[in-house]
Amino acid sequence: MNVLALENQLCFPLYAASKEIIKQYKDLLDPLNLTYTQYLVMLVLWEEEAISVKALGKQLCLDSGTLTPVLKKLEAKGYLARNRNQDDERSLRVTLTESGKALHKQALEIPYKVTEFLPLEPEELSVLHELTTKMVQKFQEQEK
Image 1 (cartoon, rainbow, N blue to C red):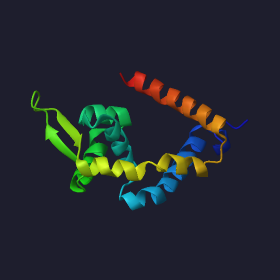
Image 2: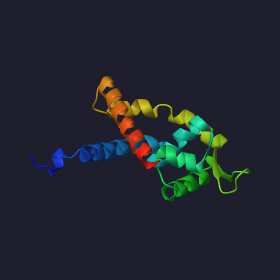
Image 3: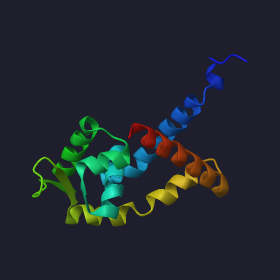
Image 4: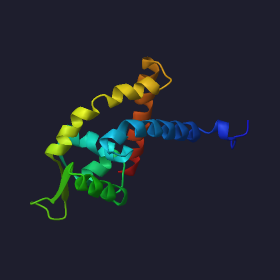
């Protein structure tokens, strides 16, 4: 077995599948005027409504250099507000605005539409989600 053959790499099918899934999201997110990364931020805010930038970055596995421009664009669109934490001026908080809350309703169908184009059975999707989540959690533990 050639260990360096592309077909023998675990990373390649994960990369290629991720790329294709994100490409499919584009058509679903364009009507909401969101990129995929902006959508991820909004998913967290629809759950939390307010969160520190540091906690948001940790949850999304994004560094501040990647996250800051995304937050600035979402703020310019009126979906969130960025404010310094009154207790700790070094900490920046992100808060969902009314426009951001309203966007939630428009996004409700996206997860269902995504599963429609994935070529896996519901049980397979569940196993895939469980395994990839386990991988991400292990990577995050190693970073601590």
